[in-house]
Amino acid sequence: MSQPEPITPGSFDPAAMLAQARRGHIVALGLRYIAHGEDWCEGALDYDRRLVSDPASGILASGPIVSLMDTLAAMSVWIKRGVRSPQATLDLRVDYLRPAKPGATVFGRAECYRLTRRIAFVRGVAHDGDESDPVAHVAGTFMLTDQG
Amino acid sequence: MTKKVRLLPYADFLGVRIDGIADVDGGAPLLAMPFSEGLIGGPGRLHGGAIAGLLEIAAIAAIDATLEDEGQNARAIFKPITATVDFMRPGLLVDSYARAEVIRVGNRIANVAVEAWQDDPERPIAAARINIAISAPAANEG
Image (cartoon, rainbow over all chains, first blue to last red):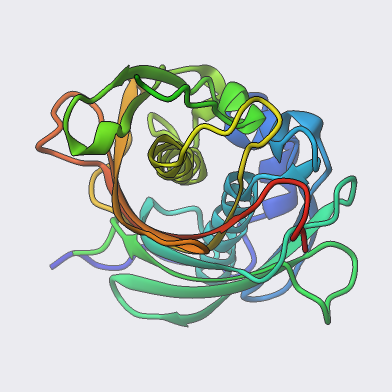
């Protein structure tokens, strides 16, 4: 059985991770860091016409919102563990409550609410300006692949 | 006659294209997402959100293929309601494929099962169940 690696609380910095990213999906989408706490992370996805589901309505496709929330959820686990350890998304359930308003930035907040030796449980909400009127709810799990 | 299936603008962003139409399974399109740098998540892995995006595009394309073609200006509007995605294997930095199976398509709701794979269709990297609302073009928006 492997020993858990030593964890320095707060040593994972989601702002630095996003700022240092030079390529990849989060850069292509233009995901932005907003804030984080001890087990949560907030970020934003600015409106981009390339990401719409239908040119006529200009409504954002749901995929980019999944990418935003998956990214924030992963970061909430690293924040809670204090280290960017290897992990894999096991599953993700998304409820689309309503379409995001065309032109609006989508904000997301994800929280790691339970951590076991092998699994992290996450939940999150996305909104387009008014937290009390969300566009999506997500719930998911990550497998912590550094654990025995 | 095979219906012309149109993909979302977001599909272009991911580089997703139609790779063929199955003669079986109700003509569900086979979609390909060639590897590109903008799909990378962690080191050596595709981003889970990009894979989920491919699954949703495949689900919508499969429903679109089942609907009667009503002309250029009458495209139905598809709104995902719920999506449950299971990630079974890491997405490697190679081309990915997806095809959906429409479980049921009603007047308002379609239930779809969809899988994505890379080298071997028998070894999916991800699968999803997606429920999608279908609304008529123009009217009924909201």
